[in-house]
Image (cartoon, rainbow, N blue to C red; front, top):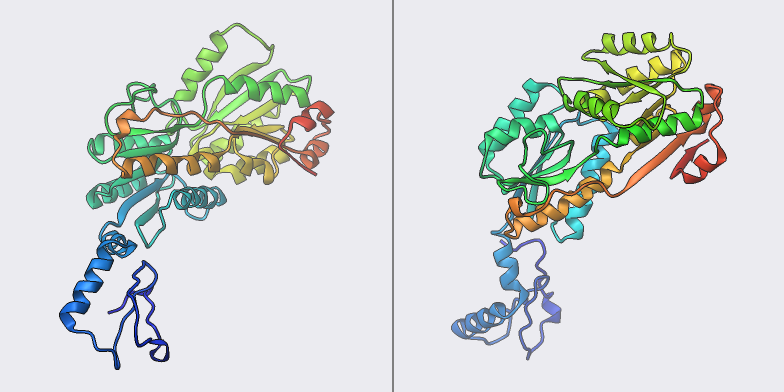
Length: 365
């Protein structure tokens, strides 16, 4: 059987005298009126192949590497699509082409622990060359499940504090990757809300303590630090749609309030409910996710998630080429985006200052 990327000379083009040229794209096959002894032809072809990319092609067909990507998002979520696409582009840029030299399996675990456990068990059983893990809950289940399969983390918060690794510079073990945010970003969210709403006095940080328990520690650290703002920040714990609606309704009773939707796979999965409640109660809302602001929130400021996924491909590449994940330092986000929805601001009766609009990466009219 002739591989799909091998071409044959048409009969009419076969010359009466020739030299053999073999490449990954073309194999010259000879017949019909050409007198070549079978042993001589095989020796000639074999010698040419050994010195040509054909040998690499033949070897490459046996070296397809396997990568499993496990995301803590729903498959149909637009955020999922953009992140997967970015990773695939990153892999292709590094020479890893799906169906040629790498097989990438995508699994979408969502936010429920039962689903995450199921997908983790399946991935471990398949024993891929590398696992790409997205979200802290996914990594929390993966970590005790294997100490041998390399894991590249795409977007986890506080990996040292959560016990995923021992050190950012030298992770050790089988886990490395890319972190998402640090506690200091809470102050930046508050400052941005204050720029648009100067009378802001209270802000609620909304998150699910079951999926992202570290935000309580982040808030304690923030509140214990020297005050750079008079705005008070409280935690709004939510574990269901009903609790989301109740928390926003409660916040709306305060005249100078604002809402931060924390980076949290649960919060991302119920963003439609959050956006609707914030709109009904006229609560200014900021989040780390651009998807929020394109769907109607006031602002977003946070790391470019797609950029992190694309950069994650570089670590997968290095691990596939033999580097130990424990020797690869965990990297922080380097690209941040500020997006402002001017239409939502006007609906809320707010006027972002021109200086802030000039700093924005995008302004939605």
